[in-house]
Amino acid sequence: MAKITYIEHNGTPHVVDVPNGLTVMEGARDNNIPGIEADCGGACACSTCHVYVAPEWVEKLPEKDDMEADMLDFAFEPDPVRSRLTCQLRVSDALDGLVVQMPEKQI
Image (cartoon, rainbow, N blue to C red; front, side, top):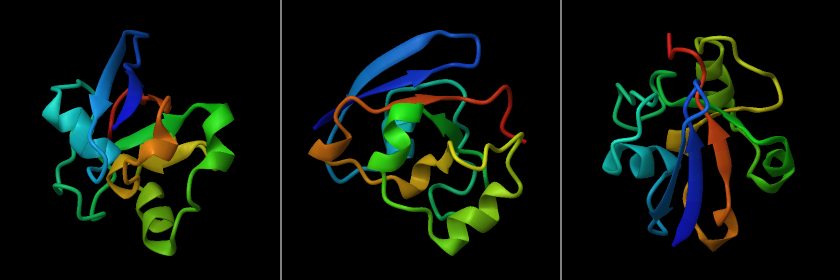
């Protein structure tokens, strides 16, 4: 299980425990975190689970694959370094303490 902090665009934090094996997107969905829409249900077919990863976490995460990078082109104000799709981040003990911030809007 990993403790993940989701920060709404307005600065409101939500700290939740997310079971290993789920994605960061599923953790947001299961805990009713506002700001992550996840329209495609985690199939990496949209960009509505886009977040900005805290700078100290960028290098700790697996690299984006080509599909995620392509989908991020459709995200609202993507950051070339910090933007990630939460459906592509699988939760493990290594993600304990992860901090992500939602964009102003998803699309």
